[in-house]
Image (cartoon, rainbow, N blue to C red):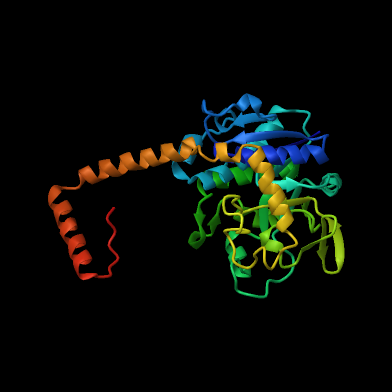
Length: 341
């Protein structure tokens, strides 16, 4: 039995619901659940959501309080991923395989190739792309050296010794090293998976161009009639498209994370985005987007209280001197590296 899950906060529930609907349309033998990195709120009717909601505080992450105080909401949502894998494997004994998908994905075909690969592999990952990018637009090849060779919007694991070792190793790293800090070699959960083919056995790099089509590989993949993906003069079925960086409230922007492609130069994918926008609006996008994540708000409160306490601990004469320095800098437009915290 295969379980598929996604992770989101309340403001992304429309995308998660849409993912679940399209996943089960094409893969009715799968089970789908939503991992909620947030608190339930009265303004949302969770009972009307057709999928089980699994709140992050229910899965037994020992270090969760420290993690949510440590990380931004993007970092936190990615850092809990291996813990959800571990929870589902341990709590649902009949589950043999688990697939993670980012919520901003739409499914178009059965996961036939993944099911086949999991017959002999325990870890399945997809590369961002497999052919060179020959320009320096954003994102360029060197950017992916910072953010990871593989995209963790998809990860499939089969229960076994190697996948278990991966999860233990990965979870340990993400407790404290899931920051977005390119200078220190960190980029959420994703950069760590560069090591997966080196550290673990039974790893399969899925090269099928119909999986995880997104802005980062549009230079090598084009849509042709009937939702077929063309790459290097061959065609493949589009299995899922990843709408990373797309905001339906700014429908003219293909993805906020890049400047290489637009709907003017890639009108082959424009129809997918229009369809996706319509679906998530139907599933309550305008309602869900209004609700900030509890953990993000709580983190801000904690940081503000800490700052106020710290500021009060500074002797008044130092605060007066600091104020004078800042006023002089402002008056004379002096450029200086002066940090007020």
